[in-house]
Image (cartoon, rainbow, N blue to C red):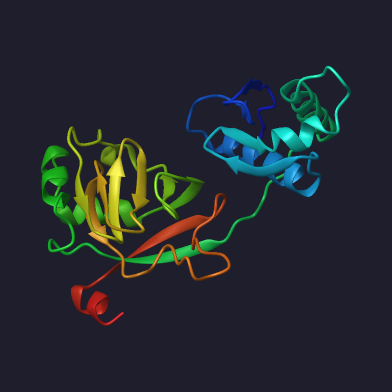
Length: 235
């Protein structure tokens, strides 16, 4: 697979830098993002606090005071950090593919858990069963986590299922499976949301008591498996 190496770098506030590889949903770019994420994590720049991967960018958060203590007098922390990050990017010109885990998520598509399934199916000229079949027919890449703790942005759905967000958000139950645009995702907790809800999983996506609280991680793949209402209740 060909990797995209062009990027632009810009400040995000006064203590973070974003490296942007292109503002689109693209698996090749996301593979590149994850490769650089692992490069910078394994060979960190001094003063970096956290590196956050997204669809097509990395944001590097740093301790501005810690950086300022170790840079030449008169040089700005941002300038030094930017140059240091670019050196790392030049040091690793060939990205490599990070193999994530394949995680199967059981989903009940019963109408009790799927308030928008019928409406979505009707708008697409399909039956609810056809929508479900399309939804479970492929695996989805975890592009990034965000919005809520443990909320994974998954892509991409079949073109036949792509649909705009709702105009007004509503309260969404924990475990709800939604579709918005070409993305699908799982709400890890109760939250307002504008995604079209087509099912629910009994699996807990986020547990703050665990050392690694989020079940899904960027680079993983998700395969949805349809289960009955009885199986959901006895999961």
